[in-house]
Image (cartoon, rainbow, N blue to C red; front, side, top):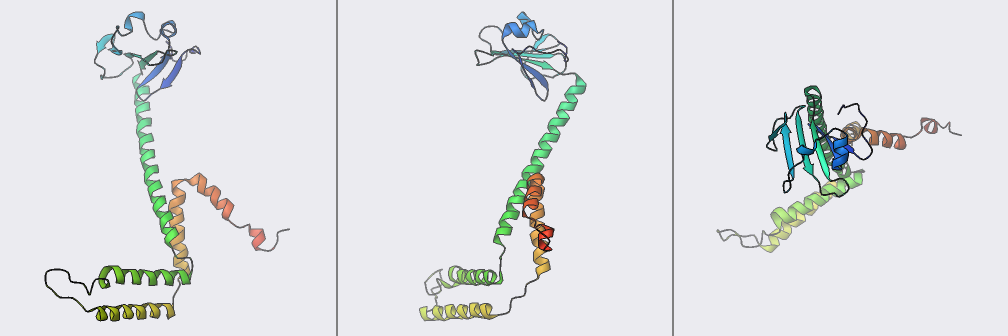
Length: 231
């Protein structure tokens, strides 16, 4: 059958990496010149493959002489005929499949980076107060969980421990550290903050340029409004 010949509507064509597949009824597939009666698998066998007209194992070299005829679990479209491709077309499809896999891997990596960037953006403090509160909470948590909570409890094999009063004094010292931070001076580098935010946004945009281009359009203020020229 010529590749330019139109198929009847009773046959469905699918293009795979290494062959063209044709799905339909036996009589329709034979009428289209895709398979001969003697090439169908015998009763009790699900499929049969040919290369140059010779029966082959299922996995074999594929070229324009390759043919495979398979039973399907579909009463309306019970047969699949796989027809091999000319070498030029075969190489092109293999190259396209490799490129598709490469793009999919790159997109997967980009999506993972974008998700990380989104988490990093969400963790960035939005104000001086939030920054100070987060640092203070972290110091209290680390002091309590990591090195102060069990100072007055027996542990290890040496038999030493601090008194509860000493531990309470240490906790009071932590309170003093936190208070010093709360009352202290906070320096904000707006330029660096903007650079970090933009770097994260660039990673996010790279994962889905079309979506984030539209998002930027929706979230960018109208210059005329900023200039006080809007009607």
